[in-house]
Length: 290
Ligand SMILES: Cc1cc2nc3c(=O)[nH]c(=O)nc-3n(C[C@H](O)[C@H](O)[C@H](O)COP(=O)(O)OP(=O)(O)OC[C@H]3O[C@@H](n4cnc5c(N)ncnc54)[C@H](O)[C@@H]3O)c2cc1C
Image (cartoon, rainbow, N blue to C red):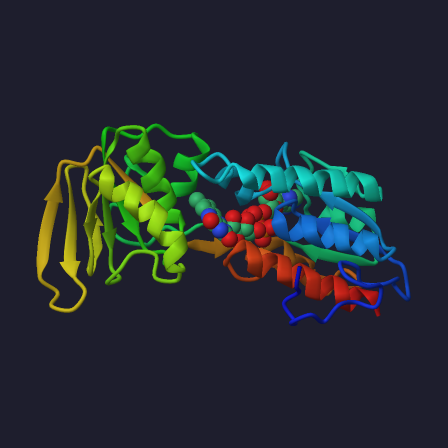
């Protein structure tokens, strides 16, 4: 196991950061991967840690992803973090949505806001129609989609492919529409290869270098990103947006100047990936040791 800093282990040896010089009361808001990792590392270095999660379960977006095909192991990871927090005596409150009043009332020395991100909805005509849904909703099973589905892919990582994998595996006819020249541009080829092979075998259609300009109940208007030549695609019962995410840092903004020490981390800082958010948690936990 290596850390982001290329083997820059903490003072206490591999996997630990040493003992905090000033053990403090830390409130972590948000029980996604960022909040879970920070809470555990901070408790391991001797801080008194509370973690509040608005949902009835821990894991944040990762708990949703864990219900997608081949991502079940994320569920094991969340379970491991839960056991780790319990062993460390972190006070975990589920169904506890933090707001300014409740945070001030709790009176912590340090607040770390890890409230995550929400799916991004482009401000274009028709993107708010009822048959247009978010990839995370589809993966979570909270929406029903029709037989024929267009996925608008404005994300260079796994989410568009994950939702295409899930839907095509259930027999939906799927078309992926990418503005990029290739799908999953930031994925390593060994990660992308398996999923692309499955999608190809199931007849998923890939349209590349096309951006969707507007949606109507019957059609999608697309145009080539270079020539701007337009086309109209029809026959989709549902449209799924896999267009990245917007940080939810409202609580962080509201708390500025109102608590002794305040931090923001994870997707609430900038929507990225699991490895980024856990590394940021590590860096913050390390800073809190001094
Ligand atoms: C469909 C999909 C597929 C993905 N696939 C991958 C992948 O394959 N690999 C990868 O690395 N990443 C993937 N990601 C991204 C990854 O899940 C996120 O980067 C990661 O979960 C961000 O962690 P976080 O803790 O910052 O935020 P989140 O996971 O968003 O967690 C934030 C938590 O804060 C809680 N919260 C919000 N407001 C409050 C409040 N006021 N009080 C208390 N709690 C609050 C929320 O309920 C939530 O549980 C995917 C995301 C999606 C949507």
